[in-house]
Length: 77
Image (cartoon, rainbow, N blue to C red; front, side, top):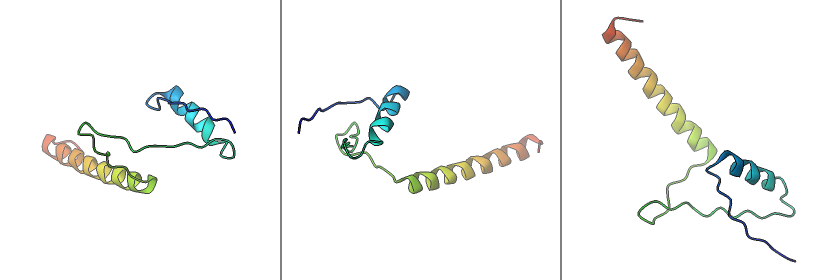
């Protein structure tokens, strides 16, 4: 078997599109996703999709509450 190693910049839309397309071919393509490293060289904390959604929902609730409080102080509803 011949192999090719490619590094794809998934911080760009085109890079993400290429990676998604490759993921569709699981029989032929193996994608290794190393843990991203932070500035200190230690792995960055990563979350599952469910964990990310839960954190996003918590942030949304906090922002909504702050906006409600701001509206009360400004006298608007």
